[in-house]
Image 1 (tube, rainbow, N blue to C red):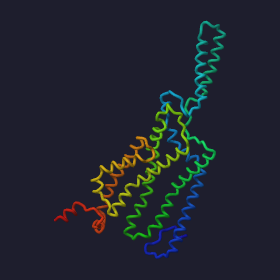
Image 2: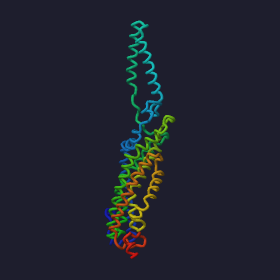
Image 3: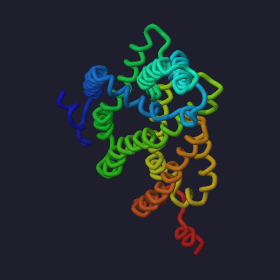
Image 4: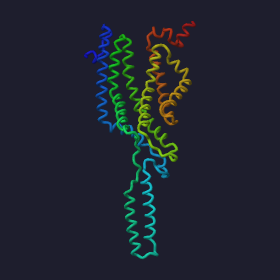
Length: 335
């Protein structure tokens, strides 16, 4: 059990049984961590579901903005009741002002109008919050459990990654470990940045556009399972996209590409980024453009990262047959 709490040294000699025992211990620790996190997340499922519902609550239907049409989130009975009270109130007010009626009848109509005014004030003036709907008998439980599981996986990710890193790191020598360790520590940080970026900047406009598109022709109801699936996949996809610098750095380390290659082929990179953004969750142009922008920025940052890495690369790596030659090396070879 103690070996699962720290990485094994590079010079340690372990048998196959010892490696399997270490792997089993680390898997048990990871499973226990995930189960505990799942229990806590399922216990606190209301705040988690509210967190996922916030982008939907902020997507104001266009019918509400213009004051036209019946909103899907307002029951038809309330809409009809509001219209009926307003029409009756106008009639009573006209009778109360009529000079052809006796004073006592005008007073009676004025009293009725005052009561209708009070009743109209008691009717809802704002549209209820938009929340997903469920249509199956077991959907509330299964959807809540699924959402809790994904949040538990996210919260326990640091310890799960540590167990994976601690099992793999002994295979690297000290020089390789100095390169691998910062990359492994940067990966969860970039993933978290991608998730935060998607939640605050991608999901709200994407959901608002998709739910309000041509909503005057549809009775828009948002089913819980597809809605949460869309959100979770979008968050995961953006989090993985933010790993782009690390992926390009890995290709640079094995000699497949370098910074000059990325600079010379930036036009192809823009086309590839546009295709990737188009096939990601959220097929609307708003989310596509919002996804392209950070990917282009990450591509530029990757070029800067590879420029620094190429300058610090060992001479034997730059001399690898798989590495691209630099301009200085080409001029030297020609001379």
